[in-house]
Image (cartoon, rainbow, N blue to C red; front, top):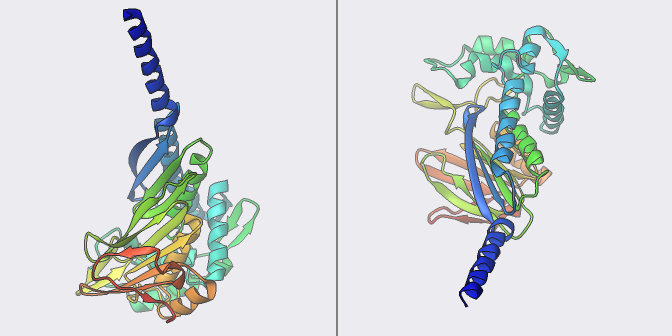
Amino acid sequence: MKKYYTLISIFLIVIFAYYSIFIHKRIYKKTAFYMDTIIDVQIYYHGPVNVSKIADEALNDFKLIDSLCGYASKNGDIFNLNLNKEGEVSFYTKEVIDSSLAIAEETDGYFDITVGPILAQWKHFNEPLKSVPDSNIVKKLLKFVNYKRIKTRGDSVFLPDSASIDLGGIAKGYAIDLAYRNLRKHSLDAFLINAGGDIRVYSKGEKKWTIGIQNPRKSSVIGYFKIANGAVVTSGDYERYVIIDGIRYSHLINPKTGYPEHRFSSVSVFASNATRADAIATAIAVMREKAFDFIERNNIPVVLISAKDDSLTIMESDTLKGNIIYEKGFIPKIIGK
């Protein structure tokens, strides 16, 4: 009888171990700091998976893109390209630049990576500013802002003299997508990649991730939504900005004027991938009133927030109606209605 109970116990232990390893789903989280923000990777998995190594691989994608595409990353592709005005770049950098040029065309130049000389006047919003850049200097530098003057041949990129490029409006989204592609190579049930609030998720089952939309003036959310697959990227004036003479200046520069815009405090774009969502959000943020026609004409799912003191005006695309659950007191308007 004792032997019988021992066999039963062993059988139950084996069953429990099998369930724990092969059936029971577990969550693994890992963070790192790259591209001037916190990167968070969450993986939902089961089975004998080296999930720590997989997470490290995804986080290293951000390190790679930062080293290649950061404007201040010495010996990186963009640093050398801005210095020498021409050169062969990596496959990844070329892919980002190609995407940038396509979206620049789509947005009529409101997304333009040649805004580098202007951002330099604003010290890339990484250093304190006591005054806004001189308008005469900005006006002179605007003649160097023109994405159409970038030339490519194979893996080589050519810039005109005095031009420089900055991939800050798209590189983080691209890094998210690169990490996504690498995570998809593994047998994972679901995962989330969060780079400072720019997010892409995946789920092969019924699991949906719950994502909040940040209040641009408080440490809280205005609402949340559930998503199984896709990306949502937010561009806003509440993380990187300077306040000069009581006026908030966002790091998002209008490439047609050389100055930030104040129409929207937050722009959250939903898309199938983060590269596109990142660049489109950057463009919409500086389009002012032209944003509404662009959004409707291109059927872009977006949430716009305008802030005046602590008062918020929220607008959303008709395609998002009912998908976002807003906190009490926040009632969105439908764009175009």
